[in-house]
Length: 423
Picture 1 (cartoon, one colour):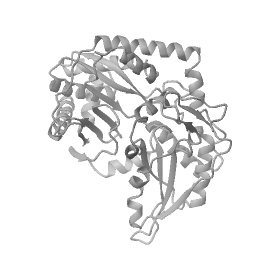
Picture 2 (cartoon, one colour):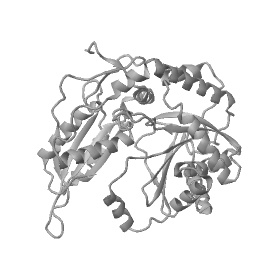
Picture 3 (spheres, helix red, strand yellow):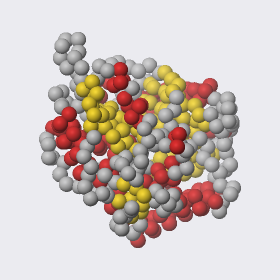
Picture 4 (cartoon, one colour):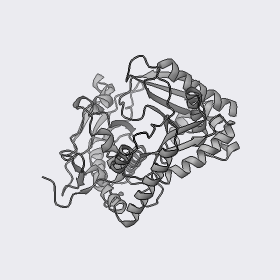
């Protein structure tokens, strides 16, 4: 039964729920994500189990349960005591260890009865010189528990607790605290402003869509561009335009999509991290939400376009926290409201360890290459580019429905060439 003190989901949690609520049983694993974290040499199972228990005490999202019986009114609550940590150890030399992350991610979570995460310890086997390789923790979580930023917060806090047991302290604010603020008077005013922004943007947007070039209706293609040479180009364009690297990559992406659509104006869907308040910056939960931006002058010179998307993105993310249920009702009253021509997200993470960056640089330059993958999830917009840079390489993953492999690869190549030309 649901406790009497159960409360509403935060707007970010509600956004995740809205995306997954109608998934068939065969696809309920798709909101899961597997991370593999290197652990300090000599780290044993007891230390990891203790650190995970401290992590669950620190971050309420790891203990949250959900009542989803009424899909239109989901609720959340915290159990009285955190459950014991279930940590199985898998020898790294076993064939099972290599398959562990995707296999664990493929198991759906029952969010009403269990925590939305699980972990397995892959212990280091002997190396060629007889020393033992570092152990790794496979951490799988449901997206409603943590977005990419929050996942990195968990990794940092886990390593901190391993280095100094007891250092994490008592519970931090959780998603229920954020929900209380979002449904307070100031939060409701911001929700109204966000909904008004959506209404204005959809009223002005053209009905521009990319051509359907897929081999089969509904088929999804996923491909990834990895390039070390594109990153200096993105940085050069960012300097010339006075924008961020994210703005530079977005400009190159919008330019390529605009040429496919043969349109100078596009409705673009942007991912807002919504971590702009100091109190909520490192909150462990999912805070991401989609927000629209109308981009005019897609065929302008690339520096002008970078400035256009930069300022348009800033205006959009001011309205990044909104009620997706209210938005769905708004769209139902606007039957001619267009769908976005494309979607974009530049993934930003808390500062990484310098050792990881040094290892990447020592590995040498990453030559430009486009690879195709089988998508783990097909949740999301029809044409979605997700970019990330690690200080050494720019990676852009494109997931597109009803678009052929050749067209997807061509779009990424055009994005890449635009950034190189900007250098």
